[in-house]
Amino acid sequence: MKSQKAYRIFEQSIHDYHKSDHVDTPINNPFEKDDIRHLFYHKNWVDTVQWHLEDIIRDPEIDAQEALAIKRRIDKSNQVRTDMVEYIDSYFLDLYKSVQIKKGAKINTESPAWAYDRLSILALKIYHMKEEAERSDASEEHRAACNTKLQVLLEQRTDLSTAIDELLEDFEHGEKYMKVYRQMKMYNDDSLNPVLRARK
Image 1 (spheres, rainbow, N blue to C red):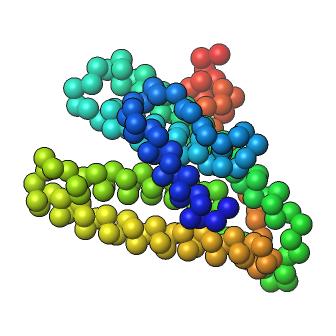
Image 2 (image 1 turned 90 degrees about the vertical axis):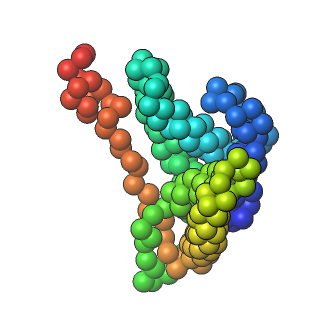
Image 3 (image 1 turned 45 degrees about the horizontal axis):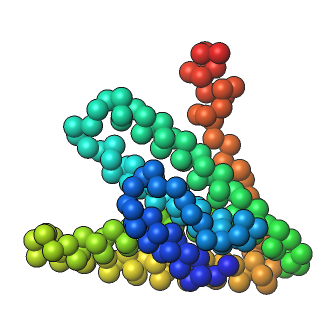
């Protein structure tokens, strides 16, 4: 999947979320489960909900119990995000499994799915920075400063999208090869986190 198509899916997810703009809104994924677009949409929805949870938890007057519940929800969300990135990488591994790797082919510093993860977060930054740049109740200075930041984010989107598309082309032509290392997060594992292990 080329970056432009993926970005449009991210935008659709963000737009759909903001129809209600509530972290407990159930997802209504418009794509079939066996369609890779379903995974991209779901991935961004998780990112979008977590974005707003991160806003809520920074309220200096938040109730301590509520903050703890949200922190644990964010931890769970991070694990889901990681799992979904690995599912997306599995898709790309399968997609390029029959490519003949050229002699001297190089490995990339990150997998396609982690690059798309960055693009998903970038889509959220652009959406919310644009909101700030157009806020009617904000000062002219605030809007101008946010518009300047927005232009940088848009340039970053162009660069990241180009890099993703070039990486996929390199995979298609055997110029680079995919090698994925699972994240192996330890803090959610009862056998690896010493605090959780002590509770058993």
